[in-house]
Image 1: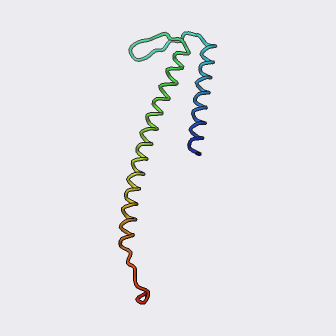
Image 2: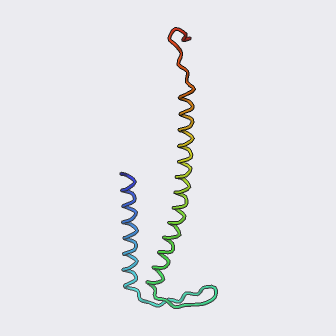
Image 3: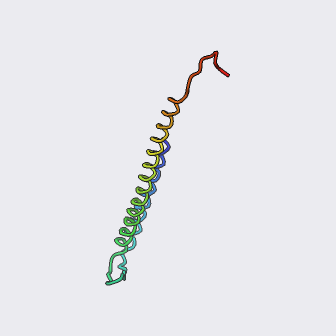
Length: 102
């Protein structure tokens, strides 16, 4: 339950940031010049902001997904090792009769 609430809050915050960016873009229709390695281009400010916002979001999502998958695989491997050790420990425990107890 706690995980779904946190996910919901993150989605709401990202949505609010997106709406804020849209409002900012609606008020600012300036043309900006972007100079990059080979060429130069003139674009409207809202377009530049949207591209930068979404590219940052996608890059962050890719890195986070990579780390989440890596952690899930490590957890699965650890759980398998734990089950194997638990099963081996359960079979190695010998039950001694009451009269032979030390």
